[in-house]
Length: 186
Image 1 (tube, helix red, strand yellow):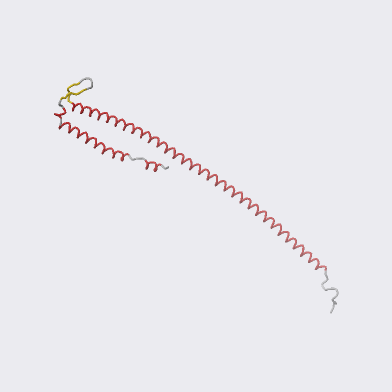
Image 2 (cartoon, rainbow, N blue to C red):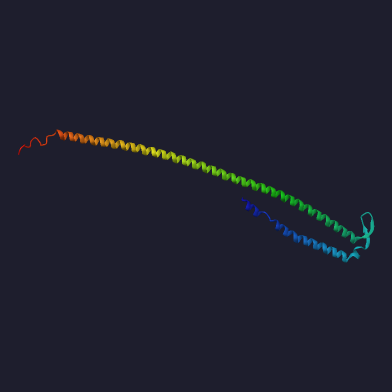
């Protein structure tokens, strides 16, 4: 898989940041509503009522206790969310480093395969050139042998023809010009 394909599969940082903004706004709106509600009803929240703590009963403002518990719970939740976000961020950075290392490894492996292919093709081309040179040398040697055989055959044919012509001339030279039964002088 190429680097561009891997980058296309990874989420973009802008997309993740765009999803966080509406969530943050929603949480801020809820906190603002709770704070507004607490301010509007401060008199009722501050009224002391008997509150049972299990073993003992005390007079305390139950609304303020509940509001403080809500704020503590919100702080704990915020700390937990920030811790979770930090660990996710660290994990995503670790994954990004591992992904980059794998991408570089894949690129090196691909380059290695191209180098091996080039070496194989070079060796195959050299083998073909060698085989072609050997075939050409064998063909040239065969042509030379055939040419030598043809020259020899031609020389033998010329010599045979010259010998036949010499023999014919010799026979003709030994023959009388007129045949013996033909009268001479008539």
